Image (cartoon, rainbow, N blue to C red):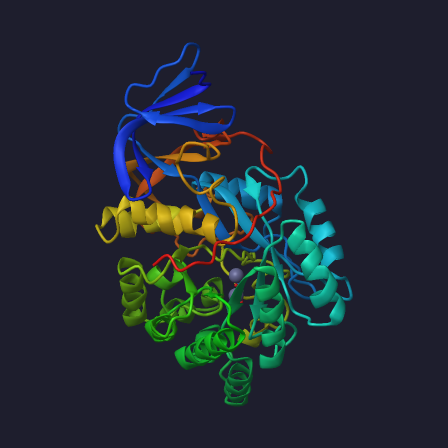
Length: 468
Ligand code: DUC
Ligand code: ZN
Ligand code: ZN
């Protein structure tokens, strides 16, 4: 058998299994799995003591996304994919959002242009649907779906993006006809607006009020409503960035009545709390994201959801803004009112080490579960499997080697994103990705990165069966 490379002796994580074996790579794909593989001329990579994981797929990241007047996201495709690669990923999935009058098709052409030649790993793109005019629903979505953009995100919050219940049903109908995957940002915009006005009237306008004006019922109600609308439309639904047990209970109930629901959580809901938004001065702005981090009890509920298999996706929701920057968190008006602070935190490079350390090393989840919720399930749901997301013969050789014993303290000075801070400054983790391969070639090797070896890839039909 011809093999270009053999990764020798790692603990290889495949499906429900994790065992020491070799991985044979030929022509960018996994060609063989087994003990003592050999092939003339193959490069041997000694991976004893390391863990071979499917390359991380972060299916929820924001890169170069238009973020309103005078606000600039801290990452473009170059810096975001560089940081993602150093954090153990081989594919990321950002969102395309049209600006102004641009059609979705024009926006995609523009966004793909921004990515061209700038990707250090593979990128697949979701569509944000924030309008339901006949061109968007009747022409753009079908055409883009046929071209490999097969997943849509809709919002129930943000005045300029939130869809009404009727509009949500209209989008769900198009998704049903196409077989597209729909993910929803579930927070009740009217309730948030009411609470914000009340807080401002009371003169309470610091960053901590961001969390207090988006309390759990805001998310729970919207989650319930989104799931009810999905039931009415008869479609599967993905609830992204779930932050607490009450919203998760809504998902459990929907599943119990037979709905297909996929659920995502993120590192901020496992490790940060609303108290972080209450840090002295303007520091709390570093933690402003939506939904906001909650309390220790909600963290425990999210961990229980991970341990019990309620969450099938673990993503970063990387949405980076610089802190000390008038085009970032400190934009004009942000210190006067929390409503002007851009929402989002940088997490693309730290997502996997945090879950590995807090989840695998602390014994909460197995290596296989880690692979499922950080790679395999993302590939399945968004139409990238079996090419991506698994260590299996025939799949792309997108593989990350982890040193499970390497302990590091997360520090902004070591990270590669475009933000000027990390919410996890000083957080200690055990386990770190030390090498990776993208389609069989070294991506990360001895702390350096192969440049621009990825690109935009098309998604196939989402696999939206229940896989709980
Ligand atoms: N929703 C996201 O998914 N990401 C960042 C901001 C937001 O509201
Ligand atoms: Zn969102
Ligand atoms: Zn997001």
